[in-house]
View (spheres, rainbow, N blue to C red):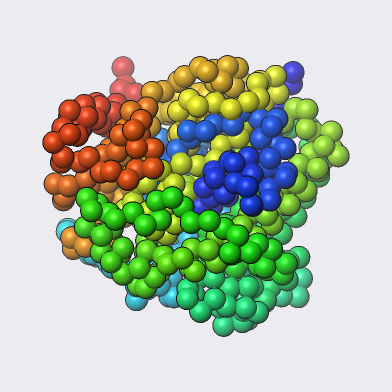
Length: 521
């Protein structure tokens, strides 16, 4: 077999159980379901960080957020960071990106519509950073929305390994980036037609839900589909194998599907999660605070407690966005087949992180690590490899090394994951017995007046989460309590399990210490 092409399809903030292949009986994802039957489906795949930017930088580098330089949204991946995409490029691959990338800061500071809701703790103690970059001014502004507002931005020839980059910056129906200019060339100004003030329908109980006035054919999801197809069609002009990163900004909030997708699902048909009315008697203080204010105080992108109407409407509208993505994926896969590329192409489908989406009554993410937030869908279809379902642990940290092995390319020093190829050959194989999830942001979400930081370890036995600055944490016995309803942290009947998991966490954190450079000899 010749060196395979690679098609990497990623969504933003999608839970595995919001797909048909993830056993959701309502949402319609026939194209992804078909792909799942032809792929290895990883039931226990997890993000390394449940926020967009850090997670995507981990995918690209194969390194944990605490060591790769882009540890939080609002930061940039170091300009000279190595990526598996760069390795592919150096070994003869044509590399392209379409959609949301988020290797650099896309906001240029907090977005205007949520700035008042941000609980900042800037400035951090001290002035300046521990390391001062020696790169040219503006090196970290290539994805910033303001840079793309006035003109089409020509991207660098090697953007973290990508030959070509076509960006969507931010979410919803009026993002910027190259999409903004594509839409204007096609007769639509997203800044005057998008957004809640121009919506065809709005949901009064949450301003993050509305029917976009942007037509289906010019919506950001369509842009990703069309431009990805254009990239694939140009393979006829190039003998090199390709790597395409096709990145849909949806179904991340705001939930703004256009046209028929907004009313495609009936909110009343969607059942409440079994954990919806969790009492949270032993939960973290910031979780208890939002639960006490159910249905109100939805603070920008931060978690809040939904009422039944908010949950059902958000689910129905999000399902519409997911079905729109599924139809786009179907068009991309049909193009692969039409061009005769399907037999020699590795296909990955995943998401950068999940969403609480009603579990325990909560919505969104930030400083909560319930499994719905950190679990991600992961399908890998590879020529000559097995299909099926695997219950073995996987992390988005592992994808770079997996793809380099499938492409017969060398990994580089400092990659911290494990190739999943053994599992692609045998779904019962195992490459790791636990998963580490990091999270941190320089804002105050937990109410302690400082930046927040948490670390989570997930094993067969339990999920442990500790929070910097708190003596309290979370410990769930996943064998006896798969729904994460009984927090054993600090309880007498959880002492042995807590000590065992704390010890494992300490050794795991040690194993991810920074070893990205070899000493000179």
